[in-house]
Structure formats: structure tokens, C-alpha cells
Image (cartoon, rainbow, N blue to C red):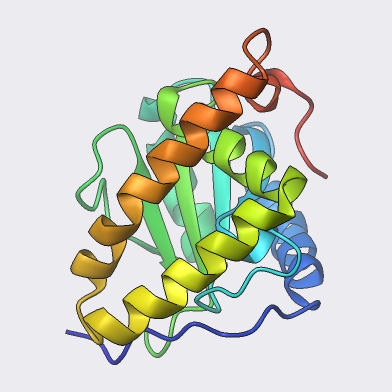
Length: 183
């Protein structure tokens, strides 16, 4: 059990922290990572978040994760396997102390990949929805205290609804899944 769920005000330093870490990961995983994306709440300007930079690394095939464990360990990441989510390999940093970064390694173009980019891009494009998500997260953090699993589960309905709205507003492309990665 960890401490209370911390929701921090948006920090304009988060994108820069992502860019620095992205550069280190890209160098460590050269030849393995097809794309690297900033996802999660820290990737949405103005949105309060747990102060942990979420990074999604896209591989051609998930089995390729094995070649990425040692390079990410050299950057201070601990590999936790699927960590409860089939089709994803999870890495967290640092090994000891409060997490500052986490990597979700998946197949580029997988359902996980597409959903995370769809949700992120929808919140970026819809400030009212981002504000509603912000309020919900604060309320849930207060209600669930240290129960991260309960907090995460309670956000699911909002997230699925936002994903459905995003798909309805962009039925042709689900553009995020196929567009050029951030960089």
C-alpha cells in the first residue's frame, strides 16, 4: 500500500521533463522503439495529475520488450512485467522512492496504443472535457485516499465515454493511432 493519492496542479515543466526522458529512452532503445509518446494526464496542458510522467513506447512486436529491459534498467527503470495489463510491459522509475516516470511498452498500433492516444488527444482538443476530468480526479482522490485500484476503476466510465466521443467525432481516422509520433 502506498500513501494517499496525490493530484498535483498542472506543472508547465512536465512537457520538458517528458522531452528529456524521451531523449534518454530513444537513445537507449535505438533500433527497438518505433515511437515514443507522452500520455496520461501530465501530457494534457492545464490538467491536474499525479506527478508521474507517463511514457508509451511502441514496439513492432511486444516480444521485443526483452531487448529493452537492460537499456531501461541503465536509466533507472524497474521492469514489472505486464503488471496486471495483458499486452503491455510496465517499467517504473525510480526503483526506490516516489515514482517520477513510468513506461508502458506496447505494440505500436495496438488497442492500448490507440486508446491512450485517442483519450489524450481528445482532452487536449476539448478543454471542457479536460476540466470535467480534472474535477473528477480530485473528487476521486479525496474519496479513495490510498486505494489506487479503486481510484483507477472509478475513472473508467469517464474515460470510456470520452473515448467514444472522440471516435464519434473522428470516425475516419482515429488519427492518433496512425499519425507521426511526438518528438
